[in-house]
Image (cartoon, rainbow, N blue to C red; front, side):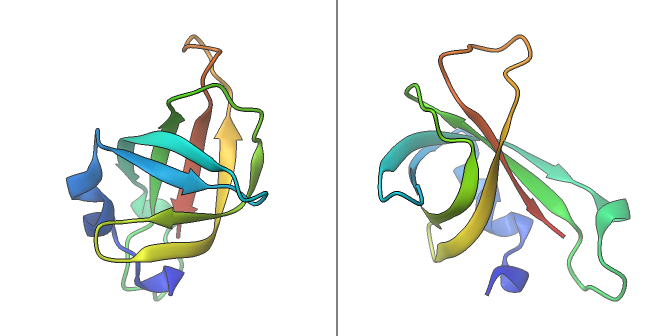
Length: 102
């Protein structure tokens, strides 16, 4: 299923809010911040260009990483690995997360 997800699934959701369902069952309100293409990270023979999605939590969270559920407009991503990024000059009260698709 995850191999069928393309950047187009996220494009209309940029700067929109949503909910990331964490491994412990909690619902974390997030905003989809950025979509980055990474053609050099694509798997050989893959028809899809690798890309990543940056998410920002809208509330403080201790969540670091794990398999999450993320509802999108026309599908729901199940067991997608979400990893935290350092705040690095951003609001330290929020969480910044990345999902990589390659």
